[in-house]
Length: 265
Image 1 (cartoon, rainbow, N blue to C red):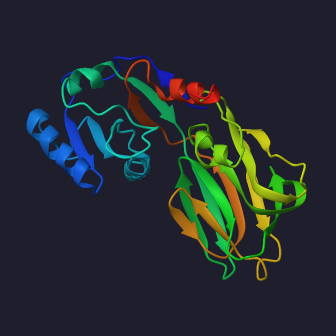
Image 2 (tube, helix red, strand yellow):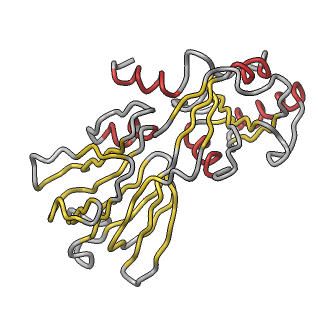
């Protein structure tokens, strides 16, 4: 389960580190803000300020995975769903008043056709995607019990509440409130069974997806921006031992943004 803490959880004297995407706009913002507010190394700073878009925010969260370092994002990209509005003035005060959202990643353990086993974490979703012109064919088990013997589709994904507004929503999956103790299991362009629209599962669930006919119908397993080709089995579960901390301006918390998405705002 994710949760949101009240505003004012970071002192106004907090030291800041600025990290930026490779765009000229983000790099310029980082230089200007560093002159105004000082710039520590991310390891020394109390708060990391990420300048870029949602993709860069995800990269930054991955970079500080397991540290519980608060990340305050400001949008210097295109979408900016995870980000705060960019303004140069009053940054220390905004961070001091920010609401703290704590979320947990998914852990993916995937095996490929050569027997290689890899682990990766995802903040948004773990996806299994077809690699060829043929649809993927998979078997889905929930807590070691087969629930769907055969799904033929372009793929299937497992999304956190944070990621439920992203690829999951585009695949007609449900938007989950940030504090809901749920994960979404959503097919991508299901061909058979046509009626299956996915499932909402407790976030304590272990999901195992086995690729059927993997030589004929190769499948890639993707955890956010990490990809394993020719996957044959993938296990997904939420890792509640890891807290990821995001800071958002009051009234624009991640929980509020997800709620707005449910009403089309």
